[in-house]
Amino acid sequence: SQQGEEDPQALSIQEGENATMNCSYKTSINNLQWYRQNSGRGLVHLILIRSNEREKHSGRLRVTLDTSKKSSSLLITASRAADTASYFCATADLSGGGADGLTFGKGTHLIIQP
Amino acid sequence: KAGVTQTPRYLIKTRGQQVTLSCSPISGHRSVSWYQQTPGQGLQFLFEYFSETQRNKGNFPGRFSGRQFSNSRSEMNVSTLELGDSALYLCASSFGQLQETQYFGPGTRLLVL
Image (cartoon, chains in turn brown, orange):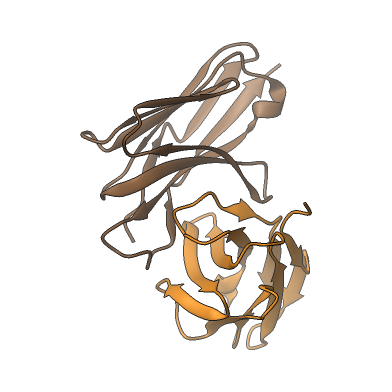
């Protein structure tokens, strides 16, 4: 299946700094979602941005979407130790009719240093 | 509302055995999807059930199967286990469409020896 790619694979920053991670995808999409996963646990939905939206905010999260470049970014402002987790972008391939389910990238592992 | 629950949380099996994992979706959700997560392959889609019918299926061998009951609870079965089946198996539910927000359970960690 076509997977998105998150960049960077790992990111370590100091508490209070902003963290930016990027996602690229390959297909036409209806929306793009970001999820967080704490070590070996289930995924938690963070935000969904539709293909006709360019930017969306939720608390300390800011997501942008550029469908012409097939890319998205997730910005976490004023990071906290509790933000330490892996972050995944996910898309559903419209042309596939859902056969691939949600396609996830490999994720960005974010470490917030106290 | 209670979240998605998965049982068991941890499981150890030996090669050749079979295993059944269970998932109870959020009340009112009719779509249940299953994913396999491994360090090497990441998150991969197994299949999706909606109203007791398999609606979508990923690229996994026939050893992986599932079903959904009338109360939307779902089970997945893996027969003739292989070492490579060791993984975190995640279940997710939503109201209807795969493209919607998915609500994930805590996962079942399967170790095949």
